[in-house]
Image (cartoon, rainbow, N blue to C red):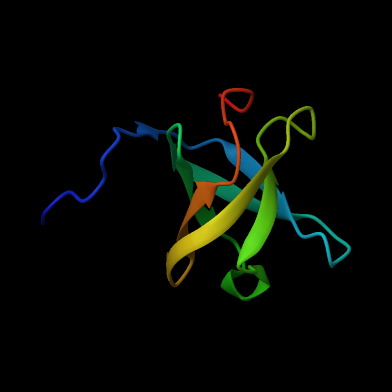
Amino acid sequence: MVERRQIDRQKNTDGALIFFDQERGVYSCALRDINDVGIGLRLNDPDVIAETFKVTLDNFKNVQSCRMIWSRGRYIGAAFLSDVRALK
């Protein structure tokens, strides 16, 4: 399989929370990997994701806006919409 990523990623298994501007509620998921431009997540419920969403890895101390790039079942990849340094 050819690696298409331009930036190395840091693999991880921490928990994450996602939420959406237009909806109430917070959804738990698992962080799979992260780098300066994006994030990989494993969703508990793949039907809850929207094209844009927000993610927090530290219980809302830092929140990052994201845009979904790809999805395969429970797994998604998303690009950050601004600087990610606060999340790492």
